[in-house]
Image 1: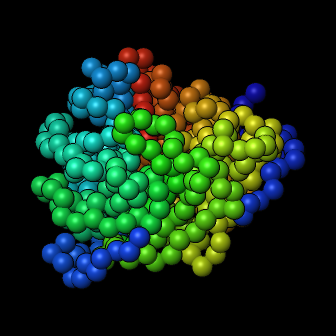
Image 2 (image 1 turned 30 degrees about the horizontal axis):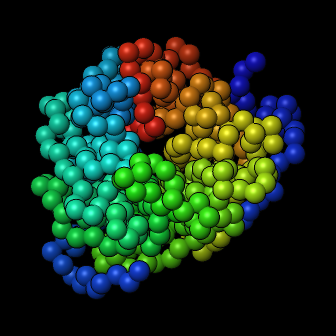
Length: 394
């Protein structure tokens, strides 16, 4: 059965009951040396010529000897890598120096590396400061001068946003994330506001990924003024055991949110929605799905990417072997795709495809309009293990 369903086919074949909707003081930083110049347009469309130079980047490797930042050249159907010595997680590209791509270590990590995509070499390494550890993600300022990283205080557990000079990667400032366990961070289209997924999960380097605050966890979506670290607004889910982990931002500022439920902290077996969106001036809105699909997701969404032209938000669930697609405006589920251990997710440079990857080294391209797989474009690299996130560059 073809699992890439059109909306019409989806509504016809998957009529099931759906899940009901659920709905620190920062020091004054002033106009310091790290304040931005005029912002650039994050969402300017790429020239079609860039497709020939397209690369898909991802952390990869099955053990410490293999851990690296890897990249695929789809036009050549080949891949390469640069060893990193640590397991990577999220990646981001400098909007002004697009040959600079940073990969962050998986939480709780301490290192990051910068790849020069022109030389295919890692040209810089940086690490967290004393009493800090990394949470796996970061983003650049609109003018490319600064790198924002999600980190946490070891001693207090507070979430922090560290600010680094993009040239030297040295720490120049930090401010609060206004939550515990900040994970993915993105720059909003205004070029000034940061949106942060505070997962609410307290961990400590001494105990690895063990969650230490299941009883009191509280996730939030925080909007922060990147110029001074001040909180603009924060938003909460009604379900306290749903962790806000990953986000993407549409050109109009709509934020798509991927959730993970801490089932061991719940006192019931009720299903909890795993996808949501937020639009400015509105409350968080849950994206519902038929119960049959919700059960398969196993409380876990791993990545999210927005296709601006179709207004579709794609979510991946490696524990559910599913990629799912919702419309950002009417919130309807448009379709799904079955793919073992799928997690990596991005949009191709020509905007024609959602690109999916898994831990077995496989790559699939899903037509962004029909949501059907283009089997002729599928790739497989059996000696690789793509990690949770992908980044498309040219």
